[in-house]
Length: 191
Ligand code: ZN
Image (cartoon, rainbow, N blue to C red; front, side, top):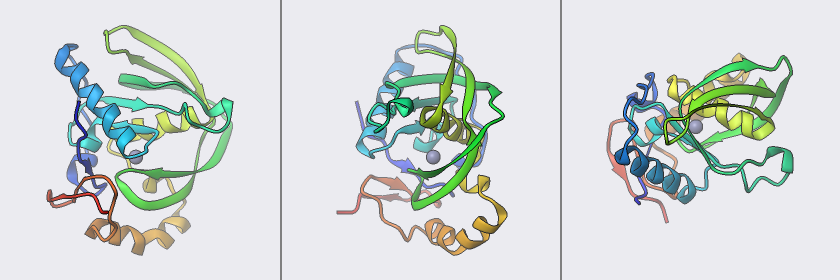
């Protein structure tokens, strides 16, 4: 297993839609293990494949450490996930992103979703997800579609966030995990 560097949100790989996975093999399993390891090393609760530079439709999520039982779900990999239903009820909650260092904002999202996906053995499944588990899946599926969470902010909040986002684009904020900057340069973790 290996910890992979995480790409800054302004790198082009995070701006484009990922490709569906067509081959379920050992290489895929190895890659998914690296995704998990990278997520845990960076203290994340979710990670999309394009956040490590691979334009593939794969996410990993682990909310098992969440403080409230309703938010908690054991580690799960979703391959080619599609959200097929959204609840009418919308809730606001603060989000962050491993590709957007030191940036935390409240985002409105549907409380509950139904998602269809393939597991690592190419079995097609669908589940309903609620609260934090639902939110993390929505955030990660957005990544697969080239959408960053600051694009979900209200226009007022986005204007207020502009100068901070410009600093993030320039790589002004250090991370404790390795990062690939928007121009493709590798930066070692900060002490
Ligand atoms: Zn993210």
